[in-house]
Structure formats: structure tokens, C-alpha cells
Amino acid sequence: MTFSIHGLAVAPGVAIGRAVLVASSRVDVAHYFISQDQVGDEVRRVRLARDAVVEEIHRLQGTIEQMGPREAPHELRALLDVHLMLLQDEELELGVKYWITERLYNAEWAMTSQLEVIARQFDEMEDEYLRERKADLEQITEKILRAMQQQSDALAGAAGSRPPILLGRERSQDAQEPLVLVAHELSPSDLLHFKQGVFAGFVTDVGGRTSHTAIVARSMDIPAVVGARNGSQLIDQDDWVIIDGDAGVVIVDPSPIILAEYRFKQRQAELDRGRLERLRDRDAVTLDGEAVELMANIELPEDTPAAMHAGAVGVGLFRTEFLFMGRQSHLPDEEEQYQAYRLAVEGMRGRPVTIRTIDVGADKPLGLHQEGTQLNPALGLRAIRWSLAEPSMFLTQLRAILRSAAHGPVHMLIPMLAHLGEIRQTMALIEQARAELVRAGVPHGVVQVGAMIEIPAAALMLKTFLKYFDFLSLGTNDLIQYTLAIDRADEGVAHLYDPLHPAVLRLVADTIQECRLQGKGVSVCGEMAGDVAMTRLLLGLGLRSFSMHPAQILAVKQEVLRADTSQLQSWAQTVLSHEEPGLMLAN
Ligand code: PEP
Ligand code: MG
Image 1 (spheres, helix red, strand yellow):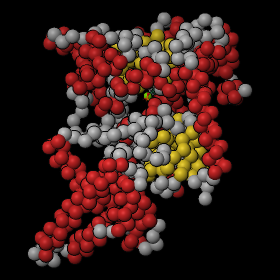
Image 2 (cartoon, protein in one colour; image 1 turned 180 degrees about the horizontal axis):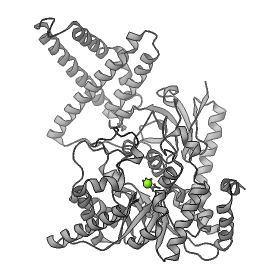
Image 3 (cartoon, helix red, strand yellow; image 1 turned 30 degrees about the horizontal axis):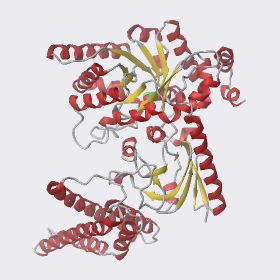
């Protein structure tokens, strides 16, 4: 039966595909398609891993036999019996086999897919004892996955590792149908696993419009809906699903008529995309001759080809924290960071790259840190605060950035500053990093240093900031969050997250104006910059530098080409003084 789920539209377009339900704890499991002739091998891998776990349990049972009831209580024996029973369950075996043979999923993916199917059945059971067996099922799945990992590691040692075959928009020849990802929650670093991945779109239960998960979704350029509340419980594994990333709606089990309508919409969007492509080589100049700089936001050095392809004139924001997140053990050292920054600089072939120093914390946890224990992580040890609390880590990053500047133009951007003391400490550490490189005779380059304006306090002390920095960049995502006291990742207050709130617009307008007065560069690198509904207003407020996901550049360019700033200027002032600016933009 067709039904729809409403969430927040975060990445435009329409995706139609079969649902793949993924638990957040399992996203690090490799998802790739196999070819028809690998089916036998994959089925065997699962069987061998399962047999290894069964054997391990038999061994444990043997040991327990020799123990008295004190050391080996009855519950432990019963638990092992339940695990054995689940391991030998036909539904698990046949289900996993189905995903491998019919859908050509790799063994690990097939295993977690079937786990989701059976777990759902447990959830629906009346009997509490049986319902709680879901935890046992998860444990044995975990054991099988671990056994598969050990077998692959052993094989890799002997014959080189097996690379996961990740497929993008182009489908595998063997794979029959497009897939969409459905999850309760995905962290931004989880999503990176799926960059260039197999999915045509995704839905999550939680998340706000400018949560970092949503931002990464936009950078993947696939339709997405977040904040779908209990969507992941309503959708079943393998259901047909339409994701309408423009309306923020997910349609489950669509009727043929709805399906045809959306397929039409999809084709229409492709045509629009094709039309925009023609603007790629046009300079972004307004009707009245004002040149506008359109730059790219990137998360990883591998994103630079997309930025170049979209015609970005530089990188306005490289979120370096993505190099640090989702690591099991150590953080990247100076050499690894240097190589990553250098790759980005070289990838942009002489166009400037703005490297932001690490911004972890809040909804971008590092994984190694004590996150989760703070009551208000967005107000806690985040971004520059974290860097200044870890000076040796910060110095490592600063040296790596300065070294990358030997390969092309690099700007350094500091996130979340609010205090003069922080500015002074940061400047002193940049100097120290430079002095260390000079002493060691390591090649490095000159960088311009800029600050992000993303805390209202910073926007209210612009003159001080401009004394110390070469340029400013408006991080409107956080500026809105902190001005309006709205958690940007919380779908419960998403309706109050308003870029057009008069207080937000006032801070944005004053920052642009002050920078222009002082002849300093200013850009917007928050999501507002890539929102075509905001382009005319920002141009009217005097902004000439925008940084956004590569996928949005051409649409914004189209707005720029149609704009006349001589007219927009006075209109923007009227919007600014209006009690409800949103109404003026709607008209
Ligand atoms: C912002 O806050 O607008 C910004 C660009 O930084 P981030 O989204 O990474 O916090
Ligand atoms: Mg920010």
C-alpha cells in the first residue's frame, strides 16, 4: 500500500529505488556489488564464517561443561544455546543467500541486510522474551562479520587485499535496480563511506537542514530527506521508495501512476541539469557588469575534480575535519595532512584553496575524543577552542597547511573565533609553526589568514577582527544557529531555523559592508551561499564572493547572470528593514 513520509528537503532531485536499511553502527561494513561469477565465493565466505562461529560456540560449551554451576551459570549455557539456534536458523541462511544471488550484494552487505529483515520481525513480537532476542541476533551477526573480516585479512596477507567495488551513478552491469539508503541516523563521516557509493538517494530519521549530515548529502549530489522521524521503522528492507528531495517527501510502495509522475519529474530535472551545464565556461558577471566569485566547498581532496568541473574559481572552504573523523586509532600526522592539502592545492591547478583548520565537536565528533559527555556540545569544546586546547595537534596542522602553500595559493581559515585572546593565541601559534619550518629548513609558502564569522559576538566586533585578519568568511550555518539559539541538527526546531530572520540578516549585512569599507575580502561559505533563493539578496547586500557545494555552482551562476546589482541594492535595504523579510522574498 502506498504511503508517504514527510521530512526535511535537504538535497534536491528525485531518487527512485529499493530501500536498503542500514543501522548506523553498520555503515562501516563494505557495500559493493559483486559480479555473477563471484556469487559462489561470497556464499562460501558467509558459510565459512558462520561455521567458524558455530565451532567457537561448541568449544565454549565444551569448556563450560567442565565448570561447576558457580563459574558457569545456567544463563550462560542458555545464551549459547540461543546463539547456536539463531546461527542455524534457516531464515538467516536463506535470506543472506537471497541478497547475494538475487541482488549481487557482497557477503557483509547481504548479512547486514538480512539482519535488518529479521530484527524487524523481532521488534513486532508480542512476547517480551522473544523481542529481546534481537540483541542476540545482533551479537551473532557481529561475530560472523568479524569472522569474515579475519578470513579476508588472512587472504589479503597471502594474496593482496580485495578492493571494494563502489559504484556511482553508473550502475553495475549485473546490478538490476537502483538503491536508496534508509537509516535512523548517519554521522557525516558515516556518509563519507557512501561518497561515490551505490546509493541514488537517502533518508534519515533525524537531522536538520544544515546538519553536517545534510551538508555532506548535498555534496554527494544525491536527493536526500532528513528528519523523517520514524521513517526507518515504517520502511521495510527492499521496499520500493521515491525520495523527493525538493519537497522533503518519501513515498513508499508507490502506485504505477505516482511512479510514472516521478519518473517524468526525474527526466525533467536531468534536462534542467543539462541546460545548466552550458553555463560552465561563462564568467559569473551580473547584467550590470559586476564580477562575482563562485567557489567550492569541499570535504576531501578527492572533491577537487568536481569543483573544477563545475567551474569553481577556487575552494572557499575545505572542511579539513573530515580527514580526522571516523578514525579508529591515531589522527593523521603532519605528513599525511600535508599530502592531503597538497593534493587539494594541486587539484585546483593554481586556483586558491581556503583550508579551514579543524572544526570538530558538536555534530562532527572525532570518535577518539570524549564527545557525548558534554551537555551542550554545540556550545562546548568545538573548532578553534578544541585546537587551542590541543596545541601540539594544532601546530601539526598549521605546519602541514603552510607546507602545502609551497604548491599553490593557499588561504588559511580559522573557525568559531569569538575572543580577542583566541585570535592572539592563534596568530602566535601560526607564527610558531612558521618558525619551526624555517628552523628545520622545510619548504613552505605564504598564506593569507582569515576568520569565520559564525558567532554573533564575532559579527559584533568586526573592527577588531579586521585588524588581525586578511579576510572574513561568513559561516551562516552556525551564525543562524547561535543567533537564534536553534540546534541546527535538531529536526524538532528546524521550523525556527530561519536564514531570513531580521537579526541574522543584520549581522550578515553589517559584516559585508564593513569588509567592503575596509577593502578586505568577504565571502559566505554557509549553505545560504548555495541557495538560489538567497542569491539576489546577498548580491544586493554587496556580496561578491560565494562558496558552496560544487553541485550548486551552476544554478547560482544562472541567478548571477540574470541579476542587476544596481537595482538589487536598494531592494536589499528594504528587505533588511522589513519586519518579516521572508515575505518580501516570497513576493
Ligand atoms: C558554517 O557554519 O556556515 C560553516 C560553513 O561551517 P560548518 O557548516 O562546517 O559548521
Ligand atoms: Mg560553522
